Image (cartoon, rainbow, N blue to C red; front, side):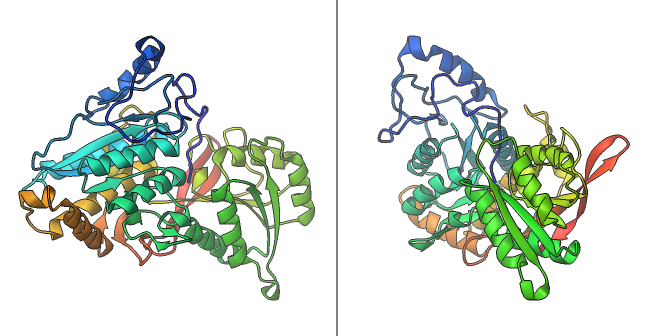
Length: 441
C-alpha cells in the first residue's frame, strides 16, 4: 500500500528528500544560512506528543539522508524499540499516524507496568519519504541498540529497512506494507528477521477474486491497472490468476494506464465494449475517483472493486461510481482504539496505520515477555543474542490483539484476511459501511 499526497516533499525546501547517502554518521553538517528554512520547517516535528529533541539537523546543500533521530541513547535499563516512519514528504500523513499508534502502545504498556519489570522506550526516527532516509535511520537504530524496529508505512520504505534489519539481525515488523518481496527476497529466500502485520498483495488479490466470483457472481471482469506501479501490477496479476477460468465461464480482460494519467476515457470506452460485470481497479483512491467520474460519461454500468489503496475520506468525492462499489481494508475498525488514540495533529481517523503499528509494538512486548527477566548484559554485550531470541519469540506469536488474532506463517506474514467495505449512495451523499470479512481472521 502507498499513501498519496499532494507533494513529494511537502514543506521541505530544495529537494531534501532526494539526496544520495553518505556513510552513516551521527551528525549532518549544516550551512546555517542556507539551511535555516529547513530547520524552521522541521522544528515542529520535535514537538509531537512524547517526542524527543532531534540529534541532527538537515543539510540544505550536503548529500545526506533526511533523518531526525532521538537524543543520545544511553544504556538506562529500558527495553528499546525503534519506530522508523516518514514525517516529511509523500508518506508523512500515514507516517505520523503510524508513529502515534506505536507511541500509544508504549505509553499504555508502561502504565501497565512495562515488561518483566522493565519499562519500554520508543526511539523515534522521523525521516523523509525516500528509501535512503529510512535505510539510514534503520542503521542508526541498530547501532543505538534497539531490540526491534517497527516500520515503515509503505512497501518501498519497509523493503529498505528490511535490508538493514536482516543484515543487522534486528527484528522488524511493518504495519501496513503489502508487497510480497518484503518478507521474501526472490534471490535469497525468507528474510528471517522481517515480519508484517497485514495481508500481502498476493493474499488480497486472491480474496478479491474470490469475492468477485462467489460474492458478486461475476463472469466477466475488466482489470484496469497502473503500469509501472508494483502494487497495482501485483494485485492485477494475482487477481487474474485466481479469477480467470474459461472452462468455468469466467473471462477477464486487462487494460492499463500510465502514472499521472488523468484522462481514462479511451480505456473506459474499450472496457464498455468488453461489457464487464465488475471493473477491478487496483490503484489509488485518486485514480479510482477519476475513473468513476469518467465511467458515467461513457455509459459504463458495472460494479467497481478496489484494494486497500482506496481507503481515504476523499474517495469518490468528485462523483459516485456508476454502480455498486467495494474495497478492502487491512484491518477491522476499532472505535474503542480510535477513542484512545484521539486525533493528535491529524484531522482524519487513524485507520489501519495507527492500530497496526500499535499491535506491532504489542507483538514485540509479548515476545520480550516470553524471554523472561533480562539482566543488564542481555541488553548490552549480549544484545545480539537477545535480538535473535526475540526474533524466534515473534515467529511463534499467537496473540489476541486489537485487530484480532496475530500469528505469522513461515514467511513472516501475518495469517490474516481483509475487511470488506461497501460504498453506498444515500440522500446525504456517499457513505462507507463494513460489509464483512474476507479470509482468515
